[in-house]
Length: 382
Ligand code: GDP
Ligand code: MN
Image 1 (cartoon, helix red, strand yellow):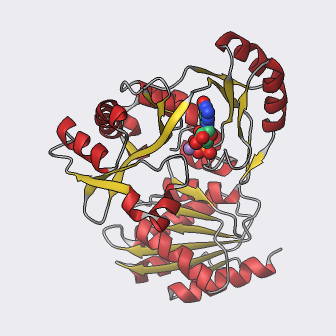
Image 2: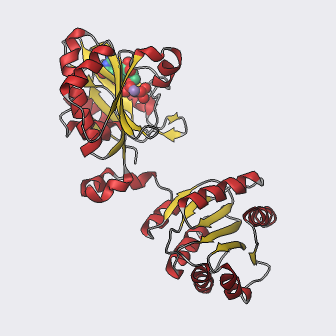
Image 3: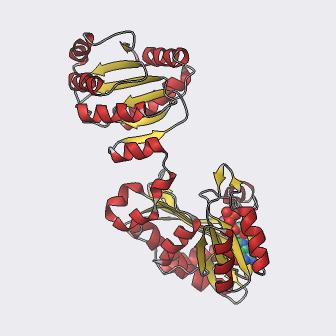
């Protein structure tokens, strides 16, 4: 789950990382009165889960109440890369001496955490990486060892941060590592991390991605309201405990196993179709799971056909077939369905389905054959 900037800063604050005081506002009036309380100058910041808000005009300095009115009115409702601004974060403006960059993420290739620090912050870090890779100091951190202040201080010096910022930055980096690990984040990024003209180092922006798989350890994450980013289909799927991601195509996908589900999406694409979703029913694939899966896909108006792709392993295909038959009894499908069943007990599975086939419920032998059929059905079923 990605957090908004203001939520990210609040999350960092739990681990002792400082930023400017601010308030969340929904309206222009609110922005004005809250800014009056904060004291000027302030920054009016669009809260959308996408970077580059500054370049898009979504970050504005305001010297007085009138400025806040003007900027808040302009930014609320603004479309930033497809995200409409609904909320503003009004923050006490910082006097910036320097803009740096700091982040932690997982480097999957080497199975270690990766810390990146740069004295060239405030700009697109991908661009720095492309044009001036030497400006980014990197350190791999073994999760068993953690990150010491000594290592952190070395990295900060290597990155060329100003002398006056180094002690604070090194300390902040260790806190950021704690936030990343103990806070169960996939990514923590501060860009820019600033040195103020009066010599303080703090976070001016924050990008925090929480690891959803750790949600069970964090009951407090519930209030972060991640569900607001989910569409109606995803909410329904979440309620039913399915691993579902909504997409924009017309072929509904059900597969067992994340790998097979992804391959299914690829094959549908290869034969000229577009998947309406990713849905992994996992190992169990009971009738209940199949009913839930079909219900969610059925709720999607864009779906024109459904492709059920099952490869029996530990889960036997005959069990899945029974689940499908039961599901067809319980859910009235709006779209035709193509099944491809292979693997353990595939023959038994096909026999179970045999009596239920029609021109709207068909079986295909191969994955690509089934994909073609589903795509063709999606095309003619408009
Ligand atoms: P982003 O464009 O989405 O990354 O938004 P940021 O929060 O990083 O802000 C973009 C830029 O706006 C920063 O790099 C700063 O240069 C500028 N900015 C943001 N807040 C302040 C502030 O309090 N004071 C000043 N002077 N500039 C700010
Ligand atoms: Mn930024």
